Amino acid sequence: MTNQALGTRPIQGLDPAADDGARREFRKTLGQFATGVTVMTTLGQTSERVGMTVSSFNSLSLDPPLILWSIAKTTAAFGCFQLQDAFAVNVMSAEQEAWARQMAQSSADKFKGVAVTEGVLGVPLIEGCVAHMECHVWARYPGGDHDIIVGHVKRISSSGKSPLLFHAGVFRSF
Ligand SMILES: Cc1cc2nc3c(=O)[nH]c(=O)nc-3n(C[C@H](O)[C@H](O)[C@H](O)COP(=O)(O)O)c2cc1C
Image (cartoon, rainbow, N blue to C red; front, side):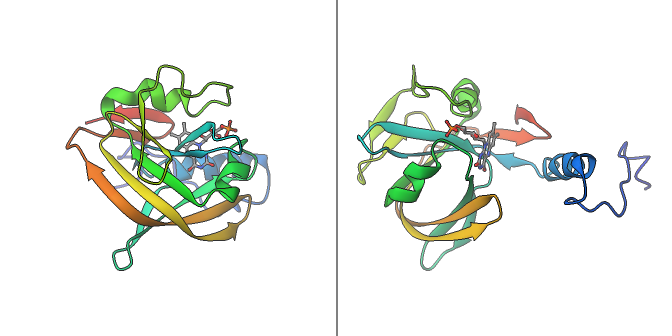
């Protein structure tokens, strides 16, 4: 089957570092990879709740139990995730799209209306998620304009709810 038959537009030989157009195509191409949606939570310097929507989450190792994700250095939350030793992965459910949108916007009160409990590591856990993974930071690696954070998973829980999905810039569900 040809690309045209699939309704896609072939792009060949673009260098994503070359110019703005190629960088836009790079973002669009990355967006073709469908993911779930997480919110990473931790605490700030004055123990305030910190959270951000993240789709770069992935599994890394079973033994030891490790996960990873990447954080843009430009985010306000970057400093907090640099300093804190603990964070939580909140895997968002299909019913939590509004909270995922809210947590993706820089705002003084990302947690407005968001039901939260405190996990065993002291970091916020969002209620009604598909799953939680409470982690200690295992390692941080440089990755261009992002840092890669590796988490050592200390505690897990899951609810069996239906997950929120993200593809080509659009929130979706099954
Ligand atoms: C679906 C989705 C996935 C995202 N994934 C990431 C990600 O993996 N890493 C990242 O740094 N930002 C990601 N963002 C953007 C951050 O959520 C956003 O920049 C951040 O919440 C801004 O808040 P802050 O600057 O106040 O910290 C994503 C946004 C959305 C909507």
